[in-house]
Structure formats: C-alpha cells, structure tokens
Amino acid sequence: MLQQILIDMYIEPELLAELNEEQKQILFFKMREEQVRRWKEREARLEKEEAGLKRRKKETDKNVSWKKAGDGDVWVWVMGEHSDDKPYDQICDEIMAERAASQAQREADELRAKKEAELEKRFSAVQLDPALVLAVLQEEKRQEQARQAAAQEQQRLKEELKRKEEEERRKAEEEVRRLEEARAQEIYMDLKDVHRSRQEQDKEDKAWQETLRKSKVADLRRRSIAKQTREEHRRRSLKALEQGRVSAMTKAFGGDKPPLAPKPKPRNLTVASDVISQKPGVRRTLSASSRERITQWFREEQLPLRAGFQRDQSRIAPWFHGIISREEAEDLLSDKGKGYFLVRVSERILGYVLSYRGQEEYKHFLIDATDNCYMLLGDQLKFSSLTELVEYHEVEALTSAGEQLLHACGQKAGVVDYAELFTGV
Image (cartoon, rainbow, N blue to C red):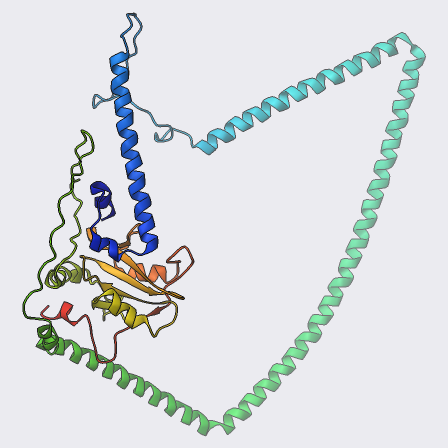
C-alpha cells in the first residue's frame, strides 16, 4: 500500500482520515523523500545530456576495454563472494600481524646493533689495557658468585615457603575432616528425628490422607465436567451460527445498498517528460468500499488465512471486532484504562485498524493487509497473521513514547459485532 502511494504520489482522503498523526508524519516524510529522489534523477539526467552535447571527442590512440562476462556484460568481482576469498577480519589480522612482525624485526635489529656497538667499544678498550682486562674478569667472577648466592638464597626461601604451605594445608585438611565428621553426625541425627516424626505423623493422619485423595478425585471430576461444558457451549455456538441464528442480525443491516462514494477525479501525475507506470504485482487497496464489498473481501481473502482467530485457531480472538467505525471503537474503549486495544475491520478500506486507548487520547493505526501479510502503515515489520502482529506489540513498544498493547477490549454484553463476517460461511 505504501509503495503504491509513493508511486502515485497521491492518497485517498478516506485513507488519510484513518491515519493518526504519527503515521501521517511518516507518510509525509516518505513522500518528500520520493520527490527529492525523482528531482535528483531528473537533474542528473539533464546534466548528463548537456555534458554529452558540449563534450568533444578527443583524437587519441588510447582506449579502455572492459573484460566481458559470459552474459556479455562487464565482468565484476566482488571481494568476499568467492569461496577462496578471505574474510575482511582475517585480512585485517594478517596485515596487523605482518606490520607487528616487521616493527619487531626493526626494533630487534636496532637493539642488536646497539649491543654490538657496546661490545666492540668495551672489548676494544680492554685489549689496549691488560690491567683493565684483569679487572673486568674479576668483576665478572664476583658478579657470577653474587648471582649464584642470590639463586641459592631464593631456592632456600622457596623450599621454606613450600614446607610452610604443606604444613598449613595439612592442618586445614585435618580441621575440615573433623568438622565434616561432626556435621555428618549432626545431619544424621536430624534426619533420623525427621524420619521418626514423619512415621508418627503418617500413622496419625491416615484418615486425612484418605480425605485428601477423595478431594483430588472430586476436583478432577469437576474440571472434567467444566471442560465438557465449555466444549458443548462452543459446539452449540458454532452450530447456532451455521443454522442462521445470527442471520437476523445480518437482515437488520439488509435492504437497499448504500450508494457508493463518488470516484475521485483523475490527477495528472506526469512530471516533465517522465511517464510513471504502475509496477506489476502491486495491488491498490480500494477506498470508500461498500459494506458488502468489505464483507465479501473478508470472507474470500481473510477468512482462509484465519484472520482474527487465536494462535491455536480454536476461537476468535477477544480483541477482534467487525466492521465498526472510529466512533464506535472509541465508545468501546471509553470506559477502559490505558493500554486497552482492539483490532477492527475498517469501514472505508480493505484492511484493518488498530485502535488504542492512551493516557489522554485514542490512537488509531492503519494495518496494511495486502500481499497476504500484515504491517502497520509506515512500518517495515511484516507479520504472517494479525495474531503475530498483536503479540509482537504486546512485548515491543507500539509508539515512540513506549506504549504497549496491554489488555484486549472485547465485545459488549449480548452483542457480537463480527457476526456478519462469518454468517453464511
């Protein structure tokens, strides 16, 4: 529906009346984007035509030829589509690893050259002075002895710490074992007391156990009777609908067919030399449809999709309503609190409207039902059923203010407003 509106750049007044302010703003933004896009395309085409007239072909031997694919078009290779192509993350990791290795190699070379220069400077000076050579050797021997002594002291400290750790572990293990034995004896005595008390209680409460068993049996029997009663009521209700008990309600709406609304005058949608053609596969949603046409649409297209039924398709959802107006929907929600909602069949178009009770106002969201899917007009999320759409917005926010669908608004007592949709099916 939104695609068709953007193609025509026109919306029916009746359809516009069904939108709330937020959906109107989204629709205006989308139409403005489409106008800007068409203008840019037209300007680009005009510039290209003008440049083609002014440009002169230069005489040169240089030319560019493109490699052709099997279909005769230019051969294009998209990085990442071939099975041998590496992922982007892997390529980045390899580049970073190569750079890191190169940087480390350069630093190692610099350090190696620095050490080599120090050694050459050191030993070249030693060769010139024998006394200095002896002093260096003695200093190295003294440092080696100091290192060995430090290593022996460190080893002794490690062994001492290890011995103390083992001693502490042994003491801790003995303490844990002693506490475990004491706790096991305590738990054993407690369990024995509990077992003894349960045996005594079982002996005293045999009569109570029998009464409890009989109560459970009676409860199961009552549940079974209640379930059979509900099934019988549902079967009778469906049978009554099939036999025509609700046909009197349909006849009350019968008589002369209301006159169709006048068709809107055709608009000239041609911009400059561009001719806009309707895309194949896009179906235009009818507006100002008669009640009979909407009923026929629901029976032929929506009822096979089980629109308005619960997920298990056992009965009609409590939030589903028939062909009612905006005023009737607000009247149903008037005595409800914030978060109550209903989904009604629109009386003007082939679609649905989600009516929501806010804190201080009522909000109505048009639901696009084309292409065998359901989505709020202006939204990108598509659902295969009305139930999925409702269940999604019971968890996720419906509006930018964070409002959610909390409670379903059902039918009035003794009145079913969707009877004509299912009568005669």
